[in-house]
Length: 319
Image (cartoon, rainbow, N blue to C red; front, top):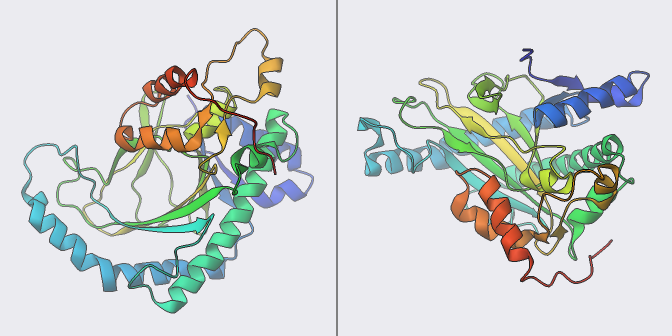
């Protein structure tokens, strides 16, 4: 079994290797749910600044708070596996529909500015990727962006995480196994300290840390829209005994009132395979996910299906 994690040069979409690169992305979406992009168009200088400022912010404003949380919960002395806490220090930034970056306390002005700039670049990359996915799926250009749009546009936010050294990595996960609820996720991760793993064929496989790469993974909504052709995949973070791992994950998700359902064009192509996935309003899925994040996704889809008959989904909002 080939378990080489898929890494590709995104700039090759603009040259004679376009078809081969599209094929690599298609294979990664169908068989991995994850892939890693080099030469994705975001400047290395910007990424270096984001990394430097993120690590400074953690040291200056969050490290002490994390140590206090660990002490208050007695986590350093645990003797058995902990299943209700993650060994991570996090900060959430919202960019769309409205940004909250100016309102978050303790952020240096330069850091706010840089994170806003980084978000603009990631949003562009997410939308490029959605169009690549449309092309590979045989959906009309812009279809995924339109479905995600709802009435106010997509929801886009960033989770800035640091995973400090952990004395008991066998007993406490950096982040427990889960699939991502949303659309497409773009991750800028530490290039030295590893820890991210995905589940493939019942094996946990490391997502390799690479300098200046962006790791892409697909969320539950893309599994529904593709009627299971693409899958969201379980992943987790293993805490390390040395080194703090930086992780900046940006989630390009549907708008809260976007209606999510399998693309009719894909169902037509697979006439023998009837619609397996539900139709629902994204916000309703998120309410359910909030309580069930660390459990299997299939019961979430089933629950949305059983709600389907009771929901009046009205006309689909288009751009």
